[in-house]
Every structure is written in structure tokens, then in C-alpha cells.
Length: 453
Image (cartoon, rainbow, N blue to C red; front, top):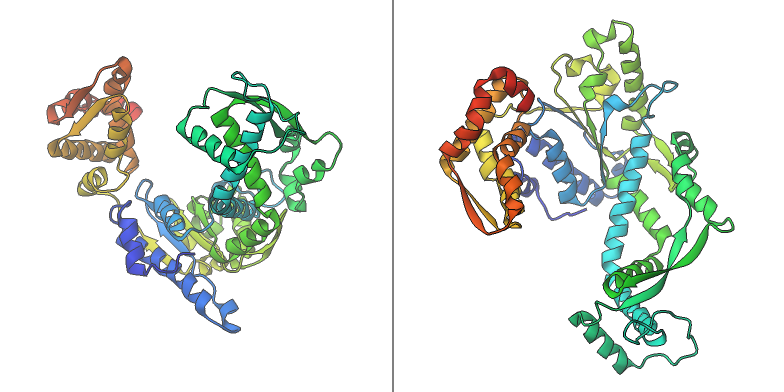
């Protein structure tokens, strides 16, 4: 976990991607910093300091998910987003709540493994280049260099020959050579198809179980161009250099101490009017009671080992249009002590969303079209008009916040994107007349805008 960022710096980093919502940013920044503070505490008290879980309340498209995702990326923490409405009470059809903890472990495994791959990459590339040099020397390639490793009696390359080969390889002079390499072939597809949710509860990794069976782990020969062969060999050498058991241990530890689970649509499992009704409300309350021990702190069995959820940070989110946070069962409410209400987006917010974020939609479209030789220029007045139209459609129909900008811009640039591949460099200026010509008619027709925008 990155310890150098203070709450103020965390908010500053979030501001680069998310417009407004200062209260929510402050809450998650404090929660993140408190996790680092806990790790600096010594003695028995350290284990008793638990995260203060957060509920983000606000309509769709105001930044709830993006805040949590950017926070996890900023901290280098394992992160998983789950829909609370997908879970069902034990005994019913659907996913059990413990599956989100297993998903978190998988995310942590991937995160730690990627870090290890970066750490060993230089050594893996060097080893892969050595193997490729031997293949080219010992075989009979399209230019007489070599395709296979069958001639094992041939003397190994000298260091000077290896240096010459690396120079040729990096200069691209060997890119057209075809090489035959041996790669691992695991015939375990049927295992993935049949390893269902029930086996998750047993903590069984069927792929590891079947690896020991005859015929399930073997190599096969594959012909590939030199650049592709180098990538295959690099992946194989990287796997040899990584201690997977240590990766698993480190990932479990990181998931326990730094993991973030984002529970979206938690309002969908809140019982109406305190759960006095029957029918679906019974199942909703059952899901809440199943969630309670996970959020409180329990040990979940995974195929990599047991994981304690005591110090996992839970960030829940929901619109709460029909229900309200007080409709959750009291025990679960108590496990989410911090509640932040996000503000609906205004027209000014939409203008800022189009202009300010590092990854704004306009910057994305500009980058995409530049690949085709199209230079896209958007005037400030056009941005104001786009924001105004998006706000107008949100008010007339369902308010989906900033997501409305996706549909507006896609409709606006449909013809430009379609004709961009016809060839030739050109500059297209998006101004107010351009915007009105393509969108005003749709916006005025309220019935049509409900379907198209």
C-alpha cells in the first residue's frame, strides 16, 4: 500500500479523474489513510482497529463506482466490484455472499503476480533470448538458422554470438524468421466448465488437482514468427522465476489488510418499510443477514487458504430512491458508520466533466479519431451546448448523470466515426451549429429522445 499520500493528496489525485463530490472523496481518503495508520500501530491494539465502512448514497452516474475504483488503483489495493442484487439467501438459487471474498483473493493474486512479472521481466527476457538463440542456431529455419531444438549435441553459443544475436533481434532483422518452440499444453478446459460455485465452498482448485493426471500436462510444438516466439518463451521463463506459493501467501495477506470490496446496488436488498412486507422482502433480508458476518469479520475458505475479512474495507453504494439506508437491518447499518450523500450533477458539472478530467470523453474520442488521421477540435461553446442538451434530456427522462454524455457524444460523432476510415487526413471542428444540427431535433422530440438518447 502506498503510504506517502495524505488525505489531501488523495483527494487531489481523485480530482484529476472525478468532478465534484468533495464529501465522498474526503470520506474515502480518510478511510484509506486510516488503513496505513493502523499498520503503523504496534501491540495488541492493532488487531482491534477495524475499517470504518462507507455507504455512498446518490443517483446513478454521479461517480460512486469511479471513486472506489480510482481509490483502489491509487493505493495499489486488491479491488472487486459486486452487485448486491446478484446475491441470494443461502438455500436459494444464485451466488452466495462468500464468493465476493474469493473474487477479492483472485484480484489480489493477479495484482501480486503482475508485480512479480515486472520484477523478473529483465531476467526472463534474457533467458528467453538465450533459448531463442539456441533454437535458431540448432535448427533449419527459412534462412538456414534453425527451427527446432533437436540438435542438443551442438555446442552452446558463445557470449559474443549471443550479443550479436540480441543486436539482430532488437534491430528487427530476424522478425521474418519462423521458429518452432515447445509450449505447455494444459488440456483443462473441461475443468473450467464444470468447476461450479459448489466447489468454491470446498476450497478445491480442480485445475491443480488434474495437473497430476496422465496426459493433463504436456508440451506441444508450435511454429511462430520470432517476435511471437520470444513472447511465448518469455512467459514460460517468467513462470519459472516466480514462486507461486509466495505469490499466494502475499496475495492473501494483501487481500486481508488492503482489500476493498465495493457493494453496488445495496439499496436493492433493503426491505421496504423496515421489512414488514412478505414475498421478496424475506429474501432481501436473508441476503443482508448473510452479508453481516462477512462485513463484521469472519474467516472465508478459499482455494488459496483461509482469509479473514476483519480488515477488508467495504464501500457500499445505492441510489435509495424507493428505500432508504434505515430500511437495512440494524446490525448491517451499524457496520457502515460513515454515510455520504453525493450531489446530483448540474449543467456546470457536466461542462467540467467534458473538459477537466485526465481521461475525459472528449480526450478519448480525440485520441481514437487521431488514429485515422482525423483531428477533432471542439469549441468551448460547443461543450456548453453539449452539457446543456445532456442536462435537458436527464431532466425530461431518467436522470442517468454523466452517463448521458456517452450517448450524446456517440450520437454526435456517429457520422464522423463512420467516415473516418475512408482515408485522408482532415480536421473537423465541432461548434454549436454542428451540435444543434445533429442533436437538437432528437432532444426536441421527447418520445424519440427516450429511446435514442
